[in-house]
Length: 391
Image (cartoon, rainbow, N blue to C red; front, side):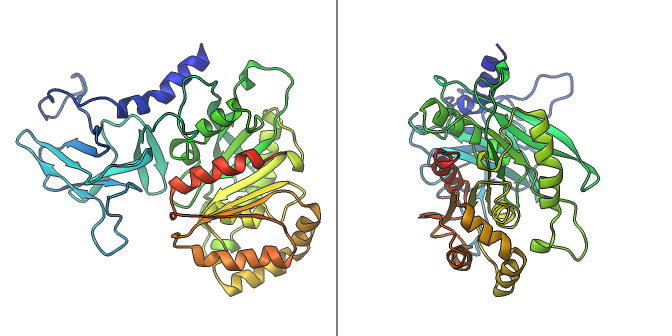
């Protein structure tokens, strides 16, 4: 029963995104605590594939819809203002429709109301981005993609867990995916994938934006991957003055000294390097390069998405600090998977990192896809690497 309820709740945003337009909208007016919520469709997926955004903000002077990664929506990277300026009607509703059809996928968005960014008051799904809460909408595809919820397959469970970090002296949080059947109990133990988000996100991103749980559910059901536990850590640590970037080892210390032991103690894991992997995107990929690749004794498989080496100085220092560990990685073998988009703004960071792998004789799988620094790519990369893990 619990599994059915969780599946139904998780699928709700997808269903809402598919609803037809309402015949009439209620009056756009403020509601008191004792009144029912104002119900209108804030995101409408039109039959021709375009998307309409709506917001009730009767007294606002200027409203802009700011969806991310949607095709035909200005991102602000070419000097033009980002987003879609909205128009207010006589009833106080602001609206705008994308100029072209939007591809199926998961998208985040906020509204900019008189200069202030807010999440959708009518939203049902949210992501805890570094810059504030974002609303999430899922536009369904043809039903064949492994990146979306499928009612006909069994589903795992995503939990938020807290653990004490002796390294940082604070309480930390991670999200954990357990595969279908895990909660029924038993003695089965599972390999573990540590999956790390990027700079602008939080530990919920790989499920709220990345659909990692749906991807694994579908691949497991198809017999393409082994059932596994996925641990999604919080990639940020408290700032320390004068210690930034690759010099800050706090995440790695917390990962190895606190989080991994906590997971192995509280979950039925196969606690060995050959059954433990680390994969990360962007900042999380940098964490993986720094704290995963040199630790062949902890992680048998490695995945790096959309990042590389920033400078010659950084590259030289990385080689110096990790020389022995990289030689050990080459001898140990195991999967090393590196993926990046041809239009990614960090593509210039790929050759120096690939050179390190080549110089140390570390065999790796390289994927250079189309597209850029987007969740569209990162979901695809996860779908590609998952079947390669723990074989």
